[in-house]
Image (cartoon, rainbow, N blue to C red; front, side, top):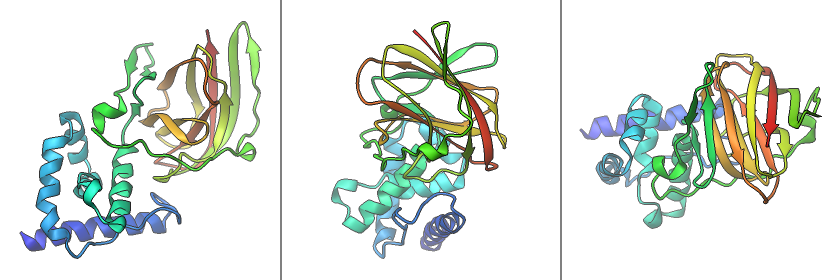
Length: 256
C-alpha cells in the first residue's frame, strides 16, 4: 500500500513537471508541486475527504482522468491547517480541477447552445467546488492580442467578428483577451467560426481579474451564452485550447 501511494504521488508530480516543461499547465509564476515528506500520512485522509466532500458529478469527472485523480489527492486536503508551501500545492491542484470542467459563478446565468438551438445551463461553481475560493488572476488585458476585429451595431445586435491566437491555458490565466464589452442587461453569445483543433475553451473575466464563466473543451459547433447583468467593470473574453494551437475566429452577438 505504501509503495502504491508513493508511486501515485510521484506520478502526479512528474506529470505536473512535464506539463510545466512543455507549457501545458503552469507558468513560471505558478507554484511548483513537490512531495511533502509527511504526505503519506495525509494521503488516506485526503482521499476520504474527496469521497465525502466532492459532489457525485465531480467524483465521476475526477475518476475519468488519472491526472485529475492525482490532483484530487492534494486538492481536498484541509487548506486552513496546511503549511504555506502545502497551501500553494493545494491551490495549484484545485485550479487543475477547477479548469478541467465548465462552470458559472453563483449569481450569473450562462449555458451552452447546441446546434439544434437547445440551451443547457452550466453548473454553478459552488455546486462543483464546495467551499473553495474562486481563483483571482493577474490582469490579462492586451490590445495586441486583438486581430482583424470588426465590431459593429447591426439592428440592435452588438456584432464582433475577429481572429485571435489560442494556445494551452495555464492554471493562473485564461490568456490574453480578444474582446471586451460593458456590463448592461443583455444576452451575449460567443460562437466559434473556425478553430485550429478539435475543441476550444472560453473564459469570461470581470475587470480582467475575476473569473465569471468557464466553458471547457467545447466542440466547434457549440456556442456559449451569457445573460449579462447591469453595472460593474467591463467583461472580457478569453479563448484557449487543450488541443492544437493556432489562429481561431470568433463571432460575438449581443441583444437586449
